[in-house]
Structure formats: structure tokens, C-alpha cells
Image 1 (cartoon, helix red, strand yellow):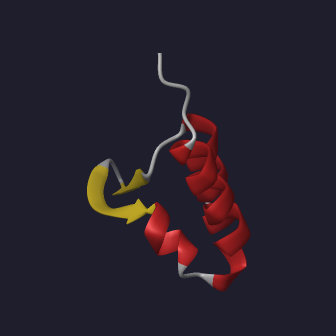
Image 2 (spheres, helix red, strand yellow):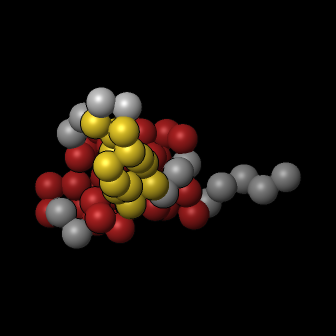
Length: 58
């Protein structure tokens, strides 16, 4: 999965973190902030954060 894919997945599901798995073993966590520091994904990470921050609360 690319960084772009990860940020889109975060935005789509309104989540801030994704597990990193290798052969069914958790090897790390990528957070929205991690993506925001990567220049290639700044726009996507910002969009994901905006979508998460403006959730509809019922």
C-alpha cells in the first residue's frame, strides 16, 4: 500500500492510525501525522485530517 493509499483509507474511514503488518505480525503503526510530514502526501493527509475533524456527531 502506498502512502497515498493509506491517507485515502484514513480519510474514507475517518481513522487516524493504520497497523503495519508483515506476514500477519504487527510490526508498526502509521499515524496521520506521519503522513503529514511526507511532502508527497501532505495534501491527502490534510484532507484526511479535515474529514476526521469534521465528523458528524449524533
